[in-house]
Amino acid sequence: MTAVTSLTDRKNAAISRGVGMTTQIYADRAENSEIWDKEGNRYIDFAAGIAVVNTGHRHPRVIEAVKAQLDRFTHTCHQVVPYENYVELAERLNAILPGDFAKKTIFVTTGAEAVENAVKIARAATGRQAVVAFGGGFHGRTFMGMALTGKVVPYKVGFGAMPADVFHVPFPVELQGVSADQSLAALKRLFAADVDPNRVAAIIIEPVQGEGGFYPVPTSFIKAIREICDQHGILLIADEVQTGFARTGKLFAMEHHGVAADLVTMAKGLGGGFPIAAVTGRAEVMDAPGPGGLGGTYAGSPMGVAAAHAVLDIIEDEKLCERAEQLGGRLKQRLAAIAEQAPEIVDIRGPGFMNAVEFNDVKTNLPSADFANRVRLIALEKGLILLTCGVHGNVIRFLAPITIQDAVFAEAMDILEASILEARA
Image 1 (cartoon, rainbow, N blue to C red):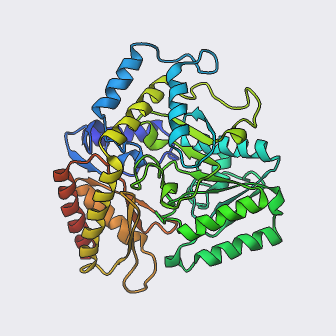
Image 2 (image 1 turned 90 degrees about the vertical axis):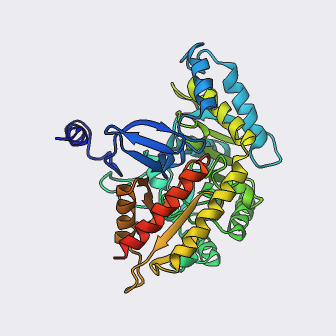
């Protein structure tokens, strides 16, 4: 019996099957864009903990910052005994978030928690209850997160009734036959038939859908949503949990559109591998909840805050926004060359280094989750970790650390090409 088999048996006996695992790799150590498992096998990581380690595994500056914090204190609960670096990080986020208005910030622990708090804040600020989200969107696994999420399996199935006053409209995806105009028309029908816009507290949207398939929002669409929000006194929430911190070639994806949200949720890449999340928004909106209405025992963990300061420094000093554009351009160029030999590829997309390739069956022209999964499994055998996504499961998303070494990136491209072509056999 191998060590991995033994660990898998132990996992199956000890951990709920609801905690799904994309691979059977048990990590032993990691460095930048590479992971070594318990048996000494090396893998190139194109998942980055689902867009968490944008700055790479164990970036020296992140590790140094966290070690320094460990030598001072590990936990006081900011709501009991506050600490300066929490305040300083809030000041930094307030300064760099899009929007020419005064902002305030809170820190929590996870992306789902950030979304929950954004909805709480929006309801407190507007005195309204309803929230509008989009089909294919993903906003977390808590009950409000599930309600907002526009995908049933595996996120909602079997968990009973979702919170009320959450409505969905189609996300504009031309490839799936939904134009921006059609999506806006659906929103207007929603306001006419199902919910008075004067009861809507917020519209929440991912600038690039994550689990839904890495579909970027059209600029014309997000500008129209901004206008609709302003017209009806609705707050716009940008869920930047997966898109934030240089992943799309900008610090925040909303910068691509010149549109400022009223509230922004952040997590993942902010902590560089340490748990921290945030909500930043208009100061008057953020101040709507009363004292004690926001927070959490581990909210704004001192280690997470220290890591986040280092992450922001690294992004600026190492010019990771520019690096994301370069890497994404090279990836999409290579995929375009592969597509000449693989007609299963029907789309290559994504800003910066938040990229995806979509596959259809060549005979039926229908989405092929089977082909995408074959590519993923073949790549894994060759030492490349990939993730699938999309409502139909037919999309492979690319989320390598933005700090990936050129030689390792080139190696990954060769594995990717070989995997796609082998999946056709």
